[in-house]
Image (tube, rainbow, N blue to C red):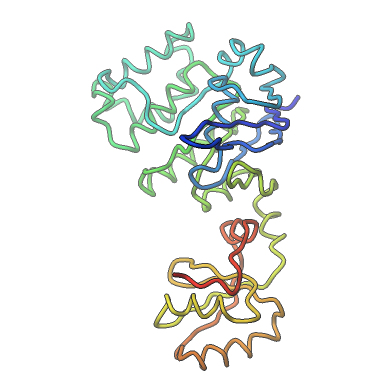
Length: 314
């Protein structure tokens, strides 16, 4: 049995003068025990999908099932077997750590002691602060408390909506280490994130943009499908370099990535020499062009509609 199944899901919202399509005919499935990632920027439709799967939102069209249960007709059963950690910290800020955890355990007719083994690794880090109000915790500690509350009833599937947004790098690493341990216990995990570097930590990922699925596969397979040589280009005037690279006749795509611009060419590698001559003619001296391996983010940018090579930044 699939843990999660979506078929042609559509969700729209009424804006001031138009209809916004948040989820546009999305279909995918998640295997039991899999760590599956929805990867995309804000507004891609990740949260709407999670809210549909956790029975908090009704889709306009399509069907969705969680462990074989329909999200509309069996919503009560689904709420008993899933854990949901929303993107925004939504626990009771005026309750202590211990009070929040006891509250959620009571809702599901269980106790902290009954399922302590499931949250032990996480809760041990919180126990020194168990009498502190949740609103006074640091970002990383709030994250751990929210995960503990989502796990306290021993769910079969865990939905984590952008759980590491706004959290420091050390806490992000600790969080993903915790997810690996939970996965080892047989829990199916769906996580959404805008961070492309977290994508490679998932078993499979769905790259999303504007409510659509661009591609679904394992991170290594997505990278292997990139299909072009990728170059990092750097010079002293990076802003003008981006403009000039995009006007180069042989440019297939060019985007700013950190300290470099990532470039693909239409007639690679024959056009590298032409590119070097072109950059000299546009007064880009001391320019470095280095062949590099693509990352998930490069694949995502390639899958999106690339700017025209003739496009100039205004």
